[in-house]
Image (cartoon, rainbow, N blue to C red):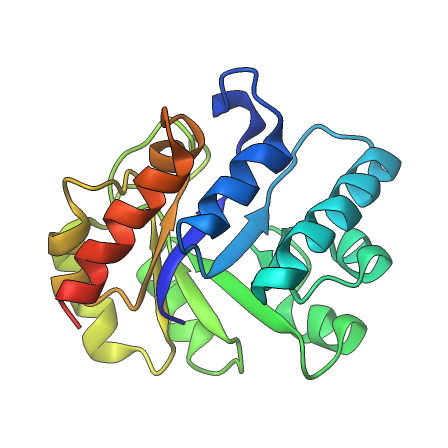
Length: 206
C-alpha cells in the first residue's frame, strides 16, 4: 500500500457527480478508491459500484467497498474495508476469497494487537486527527499514536482522518504507508490537483 487512497463521501462533493470526482482523483494519481455509501439502497449501491469499477479499470486502480461484502461480491470489487463493528475478518475472508484486499480499521490499542493475528492486507489507523467525516470513532491517534502503531504492527498502515496537504509530510514521517483522504479531495475545487499535490508530497519523502 503506497500513495493516495481516496475514500468517497458524496455529501462533500458540492453537488458534483461522484463518478466525476473519482475520475479526477485517479487522473491525479490516486492509487486506491474506497466507495463508502452509508445511505444508498443496496441496488443503487451495486449499480454505482459497477459504474465506478468501469471508471477505474483503465487506470488499474483497485475498487474497495466500505463495509458491504454483498456489494463487493455483486460488482466484482477488488476488496472490502471493514470496521470493528462489521463482519469479522475470518468470515469476510471466507466470503470474498483469498486474493481480495481486506483492510481493517483500528481505533484502540486492543484493535492493533488483535490485528497482528489476522492476515489483513492493511490496517486503517482511524482517525489520526479529529474530523467531521468520521464521527463514530474513538479518540484521535495523533502522530505519536501513529508512530507507536508503526513500530509494533506487521501490516501496512493506511492513515485516515483529517489528512490534507498541510499535514501530509508529518503523517508520512510518523509511519503511514498510504494516506486515505476524504474531504481534501472530494470537496476540492479540483480533485485532480488536490490529489496530485498530496501525491507529490508523499513521493518527495520516499
